[in-house]
Amino acid sequence: MSLAHATAAPGRIGETLAAIRSGIRTHALLYAFALFVVTAAVLESQLLGIPLDLQMVMLFSGPVLLVLAVMIMIGLAQETVRLARIGHTGSLAAALGVKLRDDYLTPIRISNGIHAVIFMTAYMVGYTFIKRAIPSAVPFSWDETFMAMDQALHFGTHPFEWLAPLLNHSWITFALNVNYNAWFFVMFICWFWQGFAKDDTELRQRFLLGFTLTWFLGTCVLGTIFSSVGPCFYGRLLPGPDPYVPLMGWLAAASADYPIWSLGIMDALWKTYETGDGVVNGISAMPSMHVGTSVLFALLGFASGKRWVGWLLAGFATLIMIGSVHLAWHYAIDGYAGALVAVFGWWAAGRMVKWDRKLRSA
Image 1: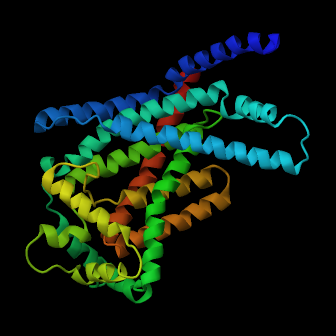
Image 2: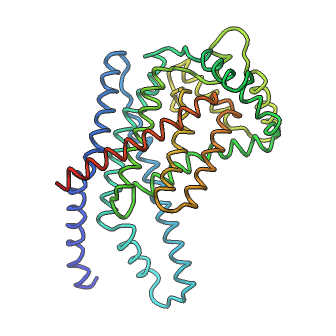
Image 3: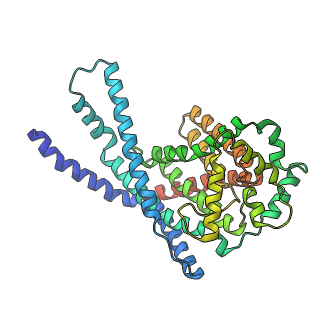
């Protein structure tokens, strides 16, 4: 190691530590919201007599760090291809080292990543408890009402019946299920895009706060007040005629041709609800947070200035909305409500972030 590298390393470490310390204040609004959600979970835990589950600390942080490592490796592979295309003749290892130092591992990016992970992990501990505790706090009781509202709003016909002539083809159902599961991938991409951004912009903080605020308002508040299970569990919860038998029958028939993963997840969720054990847990239909967060991703895309990303994510949100009904996860009105919650969460987060940044500048 050269003398220049030896003397630069302590300086770089000092810059990184300073950025992390400074990041505590710049992320104070996010930490305050996470603390609020955790406090609400602790109070509910005491009120209901249900222990707070801390397994989410590892269930969230572990995969996040793994995905981060994979994304850095992919980025380095792309840089290797770029260098080959431009005819780079120097040391490949040195060039990739510069890419790591000046892009992926800059002090502010490391600070942004650390604070994003800590904030999100704390938030998830509170959020997942509140979601799992919904039936204990407010027993499921809104499904008949939402079923009737859904039917009345769609001219006396259940929304899945409107969609059936177009979508009741095994390959289409499978494709919608693939897209529905791709939501996790899209969520991680958007979260990493902003959480590990090179600069701590107003847009970054607005997304991180809007993302968690939308989840909290949608699931923890409205999901508790309007406690419901959704069409897929309608017949398991309520006695009497089940209007979703044809839809569930179609999904079972389609699974004979292609794997419909939603069916297995539904069984796992219901088993967890009945036994109280399991990693896959928490049933909440109203409002749909798959739809809500997908709308939020589209808002992020447009706000980023990349209109093609916005339109792409808007199309994705539309397919998630259709899939949520066709795959029996949600009533259509769950999706409409989720979209409204996302728009409100995005607006409210924007106002709060502007206020916080103005306060810091003063």
